[in-house]
Amino acid sequence: MLDSRLPLALDGGGLEWPESGPIAVFAPSADADLDGIPKDRAEIIQDYYPAHAAWAGRGFHVNVLSEGRYSAAVVCLPRSKMEARAMIAKACALSDGAVVIDGQKTDGVESILKAMRARVTVHGPVTKTHGKLFWIDAPAADCFADWEAGPSLTEGGFWTAPGVFSADGVDLASALLADALPQKMGKHVCDLGAGWGFLSAHVLAREGVEAVHLVEAGHLALECAKRNVTDPRARFHWADGTDWAPEHKMDTVVMNPPFHVGRAAEPQIGQAFVASAARLLAPQGHLWMVANRHLPYEAELKTRFVQVEEIGGDARFKLFHASRPLRKRR
Image 1: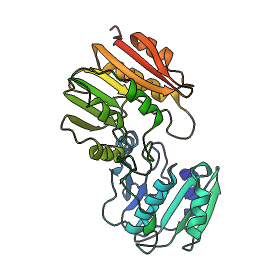
Image 2: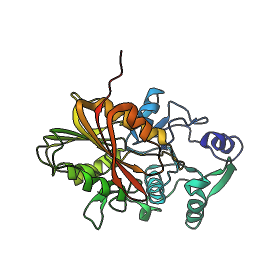
Image 3: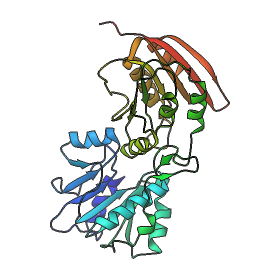
Image 4: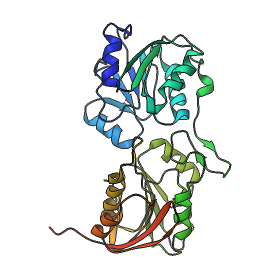
């Protein structure tokens, strides 16, 4: 963890911050402890809405995108290798001082360390709690330019980006759900956890739809969705799908909910999406949902809806249709 390794690097490990100037911290987890980074100099770069809101709530300066120059930078490695490389390239291009890399072994920190050692002098590493922290001195702005990556077109004609769910193409579960959607879905539809917009594009092809609300916590994913879904009936919301609140109730919610933030499955996230869908729907509203077959969503669905049916799927995924959300008694 960053909070266990960074103090060791700063306290006799050889890492020093410049005397002044902002220090960018790329993609720290919402509960990270930035011990060793002056709060008034830290600038959090975080595009995942719940974490972004958490850092802002703690009183930190938070941006979705990096802006301007920094006296130093810290990169907290994400799971995606391409996203990690792109983040390092951005940090190196914008930092006038040291660039610190921190990550767990499960985040691929060993391969990143090896690749960077092949190009530049690396200091450290500090090894603790199943991870490593290391740093490089002020790099040339273009020394990792070939690692830069952003939104790009897939062979299927959709815009995606490194780190966005299903970045290489259409997710099989979403494709299964898209084929199962009815022709009539009401006037107001919400795509909860919309990703880069695949399901929304299918919903907009249905009869009578007046507005589709794409709710997505990943800012970059939503930017891709804006390129993929150009229909004027689309409404884009950078928000946490578990607490987003529209001005009026929805006729239909569609979703392929996330089930992890780290590597381990966390079914409570999908269960929270089910509860959110019930809250968003009109009294006669409908939920259409796909999920990995091993995840336990049936009990939550039956708690939240009058009618629940499994309508198909395959060996990996299951499809649900739920209707008439239950309202909690006051």
